[in-house]
Structures are given as C-alpha cells and as structure tokens.
Image (cartoon, rainbow, N blue to C red; front, side, top):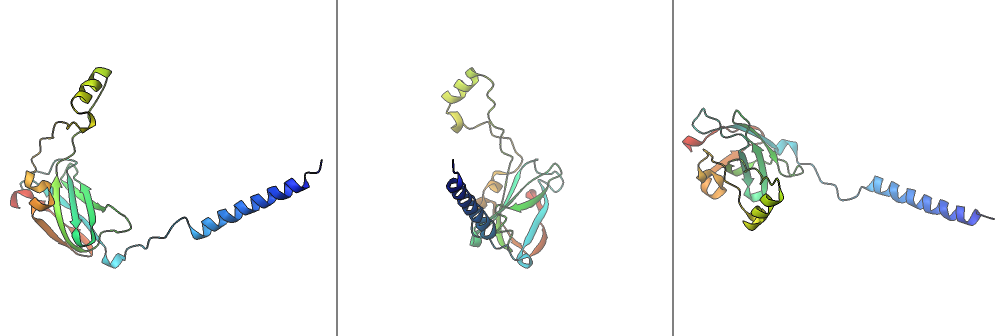
Length: 169
C-alpha cells in the first residue's frame, strides 16, 4: 500500500497549522492597548475615619469617578481605615483630574441556604432579588452616592494621599 499521497497531504496540513500558529504568535490575537503615560498617572491612598480617630468599617468601599474620562477607581478599607485605590481598567490607569468620591458601607453577605426548606422559603420571598438584611453602618447615607456626597477632589499626577474624616465633611 502506497501512503505517499496521504503523508504528503498530512505534511501540508501540519505545515499550514504551524504557519497559522506562528502568524498568531507574531501578530497577536487582537489590537494592542497602548499603556497610559506614566508621567500623567496618579496613585491614590489614604485613611477614612468617622470622627478623626475611629476608622471606617472594614471592607467599606471608597470609589473615585472622573466624569470627563468615565474612569472609575476604587479601594476597600482595611481594619485601620486605610485604603489604596486601583483602577477598574488597567489600560486606563489613574489619570489626573477632578474626581467625585463616594464611600459605601461593606456589602451584606450572600444569603446562606443550607437545605431545601430554606431554599424554598428564600424563593417564595423573591429569590435572588430578595434583599438581605442591610449592614448597619456608621457611614452616613449622604456619602453612599456621588451626587449626595458632594466630595470632589483634585488628583494630581504621582502619589496622592487622601485622608477623609467624615465628621468634618
């Protein structure tokens, strides 16, 4: 039996696959994203307190929004009230500009369903759309949204340390 024609076809297919693989490796699988200019980038960190000394609750969220570029930067508060904000999109980074700020309490824990009866009860009360018990928070409600917090900060290129005492805002 002469397998020559089949081997030849197999080699051509393998050769074609190698070419396509090399092409994707050389060209990439999509458009490249230009990194932000480091000289125009910022970092944001600081501390959030409720009265100058008492830290905001652990896992509270501090969110910065730059309206002109639709940029969101956020961080979580640690046990000491400290936070370090990170950009929502790495390719955008944290550009300098005037940011609106909101501070929200931690998210409530997910519903815990241990058995079929608890599951059925939860589903009868609205299922996944049912709201869990809100977390009691010392963060005043006015800080929970951009339009009511009234906090607007100028973020400069380079490091920015933003300490916020909510009792003074």
